[in-house]
Length: 296
Length: 323
Image 1 (cartoon, rainbow over the protein chains, first blue to last red):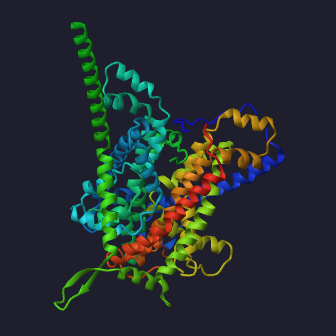
Image 2: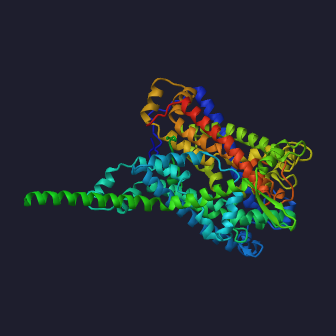
Image 3: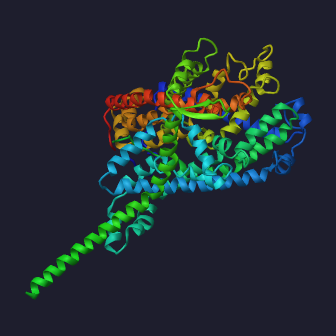
């Protein structure tokens, strides 16, 4: 049903008819246009970081008078949201993303392994319940969730907020369940014969078999938490992450004294950690995320 | 006699060791499920249970000028009144825009993502480069993307002004700020940023189709359209239907692009003319929690049969093929 590794097959012949060539040419143009729309705004933002505020207002889309990275350095000292410095917000983002990703993937791998590999009374029912709850929208529970976070004193507490990510029956569960299903149980049986216990078999034998999927999901979870501003918007308003900081900073600069070049420098620096991670692990990410149908 | 004792002892030992192994297995399963189940109870069961309670509560101001909580069905009457309000009906407008974003968003995005994946699979020129670039919106914060999107369409400083000048146009309309066009701006932003993760999943599904199957279609001289719709789509149908089912929840939770492009409307300043149900819930979260809970119950009751109907229909459309 699901394999961990995806390989793009090399066909021995790839001759295309004139019609197919025309289709591919037209699609190439569309792909190129979409690529330009994705890259151009970043290029403009990067060029704007090299301008002074006055220069930006004279020609917001033109080239800078001189090439300088001064605003990138200034972003760390002058980019502030209320009393929170840029570094404070980066630190909060890092802590929240690491904890949330770790908890989400730990919790999902625990539940996925048990339900995929241990058949016991109720295991099927738990799986079906997880799938059904995943499909059903949770509407109108936001006020109750907000109240719960207040009651637990998790509001403005990065560690408390990260605990909400430890969902063992969400989307990551689905991917890991699919990955564990494809791993042969004979690996664990061989470990049991050698005297290993259940925990040993899980951590040392079965978990390494899905490490590609685990790493890809860890990355996805890290990136999505780093970029998420809605959760911090609700629960970390006095302890903002960089995504929330940018959101708030934009509101402030749109209302008045706008140093856009500095703002763009802050925006681009905030992307660096996830961009670096993505560039390092892009093939892991591209080749290890797959999911089958929902059974049950 | 001693032989019998030894046999009995051996059997007892075996039984005991089996019991111990079983106990260990059960303990292992319980410990492994402890964190996921604890999280589920704390962050799903309790909020949902509380939400149900809120739906049946009403805070009446007493003669002592204090709030007194009463159990009542009045919140459901309020929901009905909101839905049937003759003028300025925010809730009905939100339902309408949720439908707009959901139908057009998924109706364009899912087939487009499938086509993107197909051409990447067919190794279109620069396909490796496109695979990375098209995934960028998924790794870059939507806050950043929204900032750049707004900057592009800014009627004073945006690139759109330059393009308009080049085309010899007059003044640039405010695409994002204009109430008549802002829902199109929100949809455009959603589509622009919406390919990433689904592209990854579709790429995964298509990439796993056995090479022999695809080679045989080539040997039979199957064209691209037939290859896509008669071979690839049926083979990746389980993945496609999973994505479609998961997207159903988006009907009620679609809020991020609105909050990002309609920043000024938050904080109780102004209700967005292009708001969705998710936006409605965010906007009134702190002031109308009982009404929102009742609304949530009503919507859940309506959506459960829809979800199961869609699932049944998706399963009917094609049998699950394993490969």
